[in-house]
Length: 365
Image (cartoon, rainbow, N blue to C red; front, top):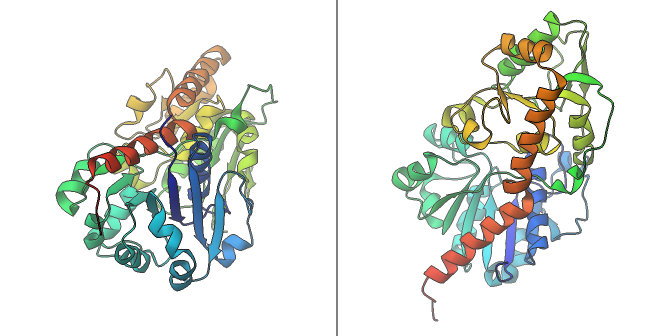
């Protein structure tokens, strides 16, 4: 176990899982950090859409505070931000660019960035969109922690001047996935995810089209913000929002679950989502679109099924027997429990922060 650290996160949201994947990512990581003995404060901008759907108002694994503006954030928490061993700014942070500049002037002991949207961030920077993060700010961070691994790490260092770019994948809080309860199967294939324009063609091809070809089977899509004009087949059930404490039961009520990846993440690769790890932790076999790095994380046909189109999904639903299905699901579950839990990720983060601190000469004033 690494020595205890005092870490401050400033992120999109911890308190509300509505319409985002950040909250569950932070929850798994911060609970893991607490289990490792670290002290953590999470600071979140108070937003009405999250306030209306706040499903973790008082986390028991970290200190938590809301703020109304960047000015209030700095005024109320400047002392803690200066004294912390590390301050970690999360991606898609409201007024992120202003906050990063203010933190740089504050000169915390270690300033890091946790990009939970790396491929999207890179696309935005290429387009000159710098609301949350400016390209010129990347060299300010002692460590740039990336949701994506692979080649983007060297790209961040060589193209954007990142001092140290490291992969910090999403993870899953396995406390809610312990055991293998024998739940009745309600759906043959399901999907959990907020609506996204660039994910919708994949959902259409890999779930809605198979549903139309297999009217005798049952399908489900859970997630918010889907447009009213989507033509849902009659055998596709819709769930508007599913809180994290119901995710495990949701996955375990499916014969298979679908993983659909945003276009930028498919192109960049090495970008496993929190939903992918959650489904695997539940022991439900995953059918996924394909992208670089996926089969290095989950071996093809042993721990995951790859679908190039709807025909591959239909074949899996109609031809794989229960023994094979169970083997694939349990293989993935074993991988996640060994390598991709919140506590495993917390250990990785702790080692990175302590390693950087040890390598940095002390500054005397």
